[in-house]
Length: 374
Ligand code: ADP
Ligand code: DP6
Ligand code: CO
Image (cartoon, rainbow, N blue to C red):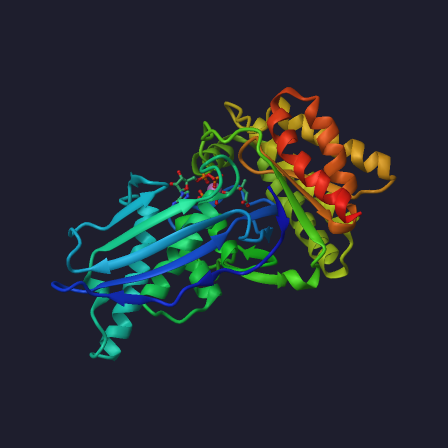
């Protein structure tokens, strides 16, 4: 998958329909994009409220490529229990984190209903949520980010709540930490805040996508399989057992946040890229330092690291940056001007690498496209 970065979510207006008999069905559909962190969130200071041990920063990808599509509906004719269907399968909705999102959204709707008695009492109706990711779920491509951002926005639209992405980010954060950043396009920071109640732990836009429109992301899928250790559980194990993690939080992340925000402001790709790669390495080092160790990257991932090094060496400057989330799949950031060089080299290197051969095949059509443009 290859694409532009940073278009914000779009929503269809909430709708209502009635069949010839029975109560109405209220419904709203929305999409939310994936965001891939360049300074990673890894560690909770409060697992219940999903508050982070450190701030993080990400780039939101265009939802023309990777996205979650979610429809939320409510009706008195639905079964009494709320339900969630994920990628066509019934999914557990009883988890504390999903419940926290539903509870907060319902409370906001109930306030509107209290203030205006002419409003239908949607807060009292069972919810039906149907959601679908057009990319691998739980494979280290931020499905929980797009998933919870879409869930919160779809219900907020259904309930006609004010559309304030920062406020919605506080709710989405409770579903999955990384989800707070998917409510914005472009370059987004999650400021972890200091309050115990988490009300200041929210996402803010550092720069819109239009600030640096040449930014591109190449997503290389080494494996679409569900990861062995979920992000939630992996980071808890790291916090509990890794000494290196303490240094990451105290020294590495603050430096990376400051440098990358400056790099984004100045559109300094080499600096942006160095922090991105160093932060990914630092995060995976804390995973290896977890006891017992967690390995998200594999030999195939490491071949992509080497390919980026080759690309940068050949160019004589840093024109590509790799980053890996909690999974083996690579995300490569680069600028449009370097597209031909990067896609071409990846094609050559990956065709010769066992785990990447299928990805190389799908890149070949894009190389033709690049050559046509050139
Ligand atoms: P990832 O790297 O894909 O974010 P995580 O381990 O963080 O993996 O989270 C995966 C979990 O996120 C899934 O098991 C599921 O519970 C939840 N999730 C993924 N997609 C959606 C979605 N569209 N709607 C609601 N929840 C989702
Ligand atoms: C490596 O947001 O998926 O992708 O809050 O427990 O749902 P929970 O974790 P999640 O963790 C994301 C970890 C990461 C880095 C990042 O996105 O910042
Ligand atoms: Co996740």
